[in-house]
Length: 556
Image (cartoon, rainbow, N blue to C red; front, side, top):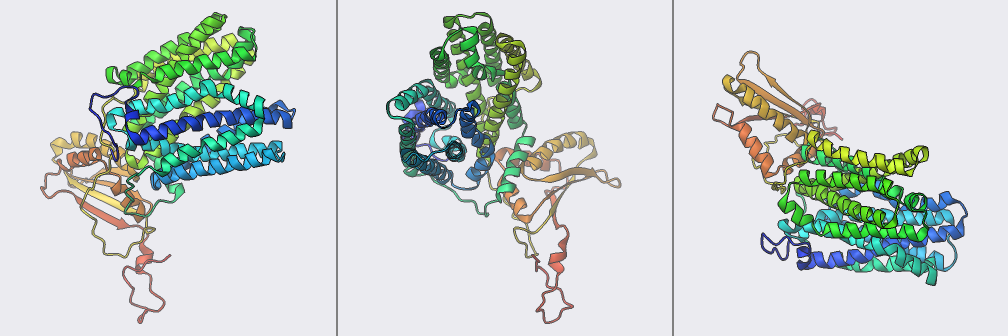
């Protein structure tokens, strides 16, 4: 890993071991304050909206305004975190949220807030947090040693769930004592320690030798990697399915308190607290579980326990039993989410880690958002108890999904990029925008090894596509069956150079294995061609002889 101040011993995987590393400890403690501030803001904004508007939909839109940026900004934020210094991106996001919150506080103190202005500032604050979040998650592996990464990810979830357990209650007391404007001020203040912690983090940023991608190309690159990288794609699908199935517990919690337990708002608060405490307790065991059982087995067990807990909530309508079931459900949910998060971090190369985590977050929150709507519709049609029981069966079904889409093995691979050498020979004056570029690789393979070679090239296909290649194909010479030609293209010369910079040691080993089939003994023959090369033969307007083309000159 790039930076781990205190690596510790290989067996040091305790739940709080990452806190021994100074950088992570400072940022984690500061993030606990910022999480409290965010939840206090939610309470204050919702209460302020009740004063500004009598419409229930406007009050509900407060939560929407704070959550929508997390879905819309996540992937672009992940792309920025991969393209530039993650520390600076985190500082920018935190600074934007802090300034937006300070502006909202100022308006509130002068009594200038309106319903739509309040929603707008909630979205701005949420956008800053969404910009910060992928940079923070992707940089955890730079702040702790590899063996402490699962525990560090779990501590991140503990931070939020501790705040979730007590933050709303504290926010309510603050609003009751000093009004919503005090909640806004506290939120703005609680961003400051986290901003300072990132500011003083001495991160060793190794800038790329190539200029950054355009943001749209970076987003496409991240999405294509997730699509063609089987381990990451599987985790995203399982995360969406799990979020979809379990969304009923949070979406229907007010109805559980009102309809099933015949309680009040205080009952609702108790249920939220039970779930939050369960999540905190469960997160303490992420490192221990991952060291003892496979992720697939653990996720299946948690799916069954979650399903049974939801069924119990639908059947046993007492406060004690419901709290116990929500405690188990909270623990299982957070353990599943943390294990899947670690799976993404250990499977995705460094060049795409933030984008992969952003996609994971989008898949999980998208599943929860759609699931909340779906289970709400079921509850409207058939009742809360029926919806919870159906949700429980759906969660158990995700365990069966593991037989069709098994999660990647627990083995940790080298995700750092390596230098592949063999710089391409270039006789044309190419620019980063020149293209498309066609790459052809010729292999001389003994006919009796054709089947094994073809099977290996199917793995090479996934390698090329996830690293940036398009339109991959493999062909065989009909006159000389020993000659095989691999062909793919990159949109521009810059995209091809970036593709070369993305190879990990595992990718390089796979290419070496393919080269071993080449019986010529002279390695492999690679041809790189510029498609539509009209720019390379265009005449310069001021050329002494307009009939003589200037080789290498490229048009706009």
